[in-house]
Amino acid sequence: MQEEDRLILESFKDELTYGRGLSPLTVKAYLTQMTDFAAAGGSFVKGFDISQMREYLMKRASTGMSPGSIARMVSCFHTFSRWLVETGRSEIDHSELLKAPRVPRRLPGFLGVSEVKSVLNAYDTSTTKGLRNRAVVELLYGAGLRAAEAASLLLKNTSIASGTVRVMGKGRRERIVPVPGGTVEYLGKWIQKRNEYISGDDPGTLFISVRGRKLDPRDIRRIVSAGVDGAARAAGATPHTFRHSFATHLLNGGADIRTVQELLGHAGIGTTQIYTHLTTEKLKGVYMKTHPRGKK
Image (tube, rainbow, N blue to C red; front, top):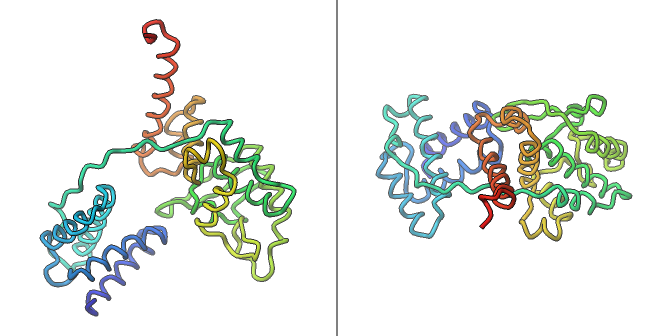
């Protein structure tokens, strides 16, 4: 990569990290693509135009890359090209005519209430590690947190007294989420045991490893995987599955979609509306089984 291109990419990284407050994983995804683009012969200074971008995307598509991955690449080019214009590095947004392939929107998977309970009961809470792990999954389901949000949640932002957590979400959007009594119970038990894992400086996060370090999203995924079995394993349950289950169960219970949007920390209602499809399918199933005109 040319030095001028490298400096531009460093500035773009700063914009994504500090200007837009994107998560480290999102920033890494943007930089990985743009670095790969440069390695394939692309330049951010000379000849950065739609023909270069299309050539790069066609090469990636020819390797069998999915439409979803190509669509994310197109989105990355849009963000980068607009940033070049905003910062005076380009007079034209060369990505303007670049179109992403249509990607079928898949409905998120979720677990039934009994399946969630089965996973929660899988952890041996007589041990400190088992207690921590159950508290993690309790929070994923009880508050609908993303894995990264649960990993970075600060101890000082966890209020057992009020039953709330203050969460820093995507785009550095902060929200306060109520936590149900059962979840509060396990959070409180974990906090009482938490100091057993502190061996040096306290990282300040609610959840820590046995060596006292901050957990990362991969640790959260491993914790979930350790408790998943039976139907939940067959459903491919992940940390996000519990977030989906949180939203779906709220809507099934009569919560309005705006409330669910706020609890999930979605910037727009459109992202939340996908969960209404899940509840609609459930209602349709009940109708077909019970209504005289629904029976064959």
